[in-house]
Image (cartoon, rainbow over all chains, first blue to last red; front, side):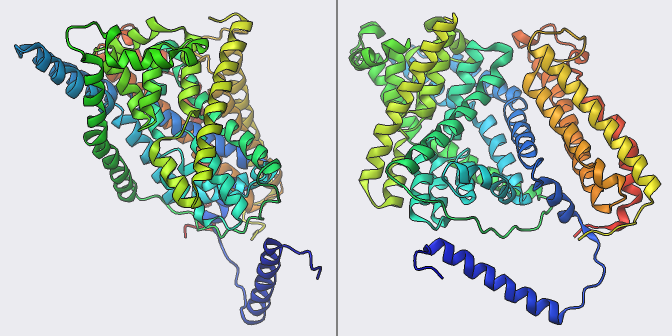
Length: 427
Length: 149
């Protein structure tokens, strides 16, 4: 055995030998009867098929997105209508500032974000069904060949899928990856996977600019996140984290019928975390933003503290077609991505998704809107994700790299969208 | 583990031929959705949906991939029919749900659904699974060869 053999190769060799021994013992001691095909065998034969594995994965993901975004739409509308109705009662309050606080900060700020409980809970439900059925482990297996080509192991795919829910547990899930460099790359690319907190941004902007193609625009953001993650993995593997990815050894659980009770329970656990977030620091964020946009008193919003902050950083975003409101949204979005949408709700001081989409479509072009969606997806991870990166890597160096790298990538991608779009003739 | 001979070669060829037919139907309607999506054609009652069309083609591929094993009367070949039917029915169910959702949007008085009628939302994904009924019956007749656990 060569002395150059790596730790990972050694583990594969050991696993090979272990299974060789197991089959010798089993063959010598067990007489096989004729076994029926199990349902799990049948599903595995097709789901893990060399040619069908990836198309089936795409079928499953597309189904998941259609179910999440289209089926949840009327629920979003109903929640939105409720808060619109509630907001009308704020006009009965004689004190103008108090009425604005209740209507714009409390009902508007919170109500506007609570609308997105519907698609988020639907997304969590579908992820829970996939987890419970055993399909997520199969998707890692199917994607291993592609993942290996981009310098990662199939095991990295599970944190990537979990990242669609929230990047924080997804980064924590990368602990199961054995190779240190594989783990670091998985952690660094995970913030590019579009978490549920970005979903309200896409729904709002896609609705404002893309009409019947809104679903496609949202899907393209998820795809863009995956493409940037792949590109980044390749870049890291070829530069700062050189080496070969560890081979995938994965024991597949048998397929089972997902339990609705488990799926609903998982959905509720995750959705309730989101609702708690809305009523804690998103509420604080809404109040803070309302104060910034309403003070000094007796001045136009263009001269408020929020506008001052926005105008200060506006020149950075101006080439991309974003105004000072977008700049403020990005700054506060660093605390939690949901605040990006909340910011627009407060700065425009209007309620309801329909009014908001009109206001946004009037303030930027469809091209800039698309670039805004891409920038929101890729720019600096939220503070909770950064703290998790720091904790999992035990170093601020990687968290710092994540901030700088993601901002540069976001800016370049948004500039590319605007530049290419203008070149083709869109504006 | 493959268990040969659970159905006759003649049945195998017959079911393989029928799976091919289903596969081709799905591919055909998938292509129509893509062509409509690219504004190259304008077929009535076919949506303009590039991604949706691609998904129909993928479902078609599942049925087509099983032809080889089914024609050799290999029991493992019915796996492709089973998964194909599962995908076809899931997408059919999804688009039926979407009709319901659009109906709710219409009742809520949403601007973009003011002229909505349910038959505008009928698309091939919904009715195409009807052609899989003979294969569902075939699977049902072979359910004893499959261990559910």
